Image (cartoon, rainbow, N blue to C red):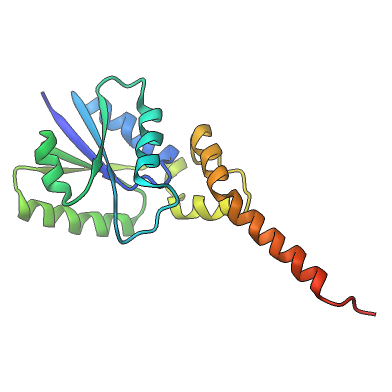
Amino acid sequence: MRTALYPGTFDPPTRGHLDVIRRAARLFDELVIAVAAHPTKQPVFSLTERLELVRELVREMPHVHVTPLEGMTVACAKTVGAEVIVRGIRTLSDFDYEFQMALANRMLDESVETLFILAAPEHSSISSSLIKEAASLGADVSAFVPESVARRLHEKLRPQKQRRAEGETLASRLTPDAE
């Protein structure tokens, strides 16, 4: 049985992530999605929330499983029995970074290969960071994330937007009218 690991922060999980998941799932008997805690980033969603979101998106894919990832990706691959690490590539800068990571992983354990899956053209220009920024400004991001994720993202970011709007209202009340 061929098993692959698809690691990432998935904050939020995007239509691009889902495309890579579907395409990788066709190539392997089992696909394990490893949702990274990533202590150096400040995600919008907690690890528990991201695990829930990804599990919801893959619930109808019987040979796709979701697990938390803490520590080295190559160690997680060995733990779940994966021989391959799947990485999605959107841009040349993604490739440069992922190429370096693949070489480092190979040095750590040469029995684990890395497979790059190029993003579908409609997903290549959108990043999780841009989606979060757009959502925080009230934009409809459902073209870039599944509807359930868009809803949760707006719920999560709504307090920031409301605080900003309340601050603007307060500022306008405190500013004397020009006469």
